[in-house]
Amino acid sequence: MPETDTRPPGDPVIEARALSKRFSAAVLAVDDLSFVVERGQVCGMLGPNGAGKTTTLRMLVGLVRPTGGDASLLGDRVRAGLPSLARVGTLIEGAAFVPQLRGLTNLRLWWESGGAHWEDAAVDDALAVAGLGDAVHRKVKTYSHGMKQRLGIARALLGRPEALVLDEPTTGLDPQEIREVRRLLSRLAEQGATILLSSHLLSEVEQTCTHLVVMDRGRLVAAGPTADLMGNADASVYLEVDDRDAAERVLASIAGVGQVQREVGGLTVDVHGLTRPELVAALVHGGVGVQTITARRRLEDAFLGLVGEEHAR
Amino acid sequence: MIALLRSEWAKTIRRPRTYVALGFVMLIPAIVALALWANPPDPGDGDRFFYTATQTGLLFPAAMLRIMSRLVLVVVLALFAGDAIAGEASTGNLRYMLLRPLGRGRLLAAKLIIAAVLAVGASVLLTATATVAGGLAFGFQPIEFEIFFVDQSVGNLIGHIGMATAYVAWTLATVVAFGFMISTMTDSPAAAAGAAVGLGVTSQILNEIESLGSIRDYLPTRYLDAWEGLFWSNRIPDDMYSGLVLPIPWVLGFVAVAWWWFRRKDVLA
Image 1: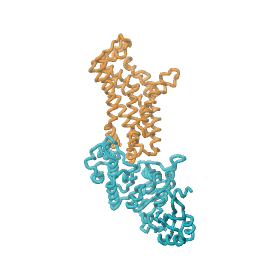
Image 2: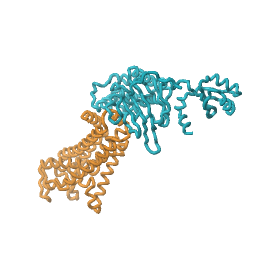
Image 3: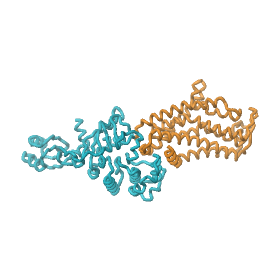
Image 4: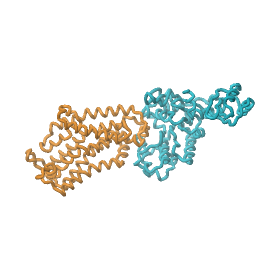
């Protein structure tokens, strides 16, 4: 079992309570989803495309009305036009601007539309992050996708937000830019910002996030500190053997082997308190030749949608 | 609200489609005035309409208003209305506007005010340009309609042009409100504008069918031309009063639906 988080419970900044969204009789995008992001956490929302990540984020900031449950942001129940939105920086499904206006004009008009004064915006900091240089004086329609994305991140930072909700913030960025965004997120987290970011890249959230929320087909698959979810305490392994039938018979007799599942070309085996050399030794002892053994973490399974398939079976 | 209106206005006025559309309503009267000035119409050809229109530059705007209010102005106003919400949705910027701490009702109100200001602006620019172009081409003089025994002084003519402009803009408010309503429901500004043009054109076609009887009295464009009586009777025609009342239920209805819809809308664009 994963270790329990021994730190004192933090202040919930983003909270989903039994959140559901049904778009039509056939489309249930988010299904009874509950999770909490506490102050100072960098939480990664992970899941394959179509898992309901974007719909969830849209509900968290009041763009989409839940058909069930509710959400709260900085302690307030989410609804359209919530005053707390001023304290949240958001990037949802790519940055979008008025294409005919210059980058800086876009930021300014957006900022002022809420009744705020431009002098109060963290313009210099935000623009330093965007790193667009003189391009902020160019019309947005001349921007590349990466430039728009960076301007979008700058816009999210204008209000020195306490919380950031970022939907796949590194999509369309080059490796250099991705590294910069990752550094930026770490820096903001050190300064005390609470961050919820979605991604379909396990490698991305693994490096950046302290906590994870894993979704598949609209449902919560796993949630908790990254270290716990990524740990090998409760791992499964993938085996390629010379005789799968024999291997299954042998595995059934080994203590510490859980569920065994056939896959294309091999077997996935849940192990509890059994090391890989021990497992291989036991199989070889039983007369089974082992060609390959690799770790397969639960998270990767979840991420690949295999958990969902299991449920469906 | 003032801040929102200011930033919305700044955005709108810098869009090419705004000034292209406004330029269009100014260009047409200028071209027509030039064409008529270069080729003066002859009353003997049966071309009474344009002949009368060129008797004074102060009657020319009335002629342009009559021609352009049928379709060109409908299209331009539909464009402004259809762009209101769908224009933001089509670029994806709508979701970011809604992430500011302002209620959806306020954003909707600001967008409606901008659309209304543009609609009135387009109507005023149309007749103002026509007045200037017509005056330059045909002079600023009074006119006498002999058949109706009516004298129109320069002051009368200018006053009537102003009233007619305001009247036409208000009559087309139904088209604007309908385009605005559709604009909250689609992510395509062209679709919303097209729907509004469709309403204006359909209403005019149905209005031609006399066998429809009293049903016609509820068509949004039923009294679109009622202002013409101002110029040959020197008093406000009864149809104009009907025309002033008719848009009220239509506009309230369409705006109410827009409000209801937009407050509940799932913003997915």
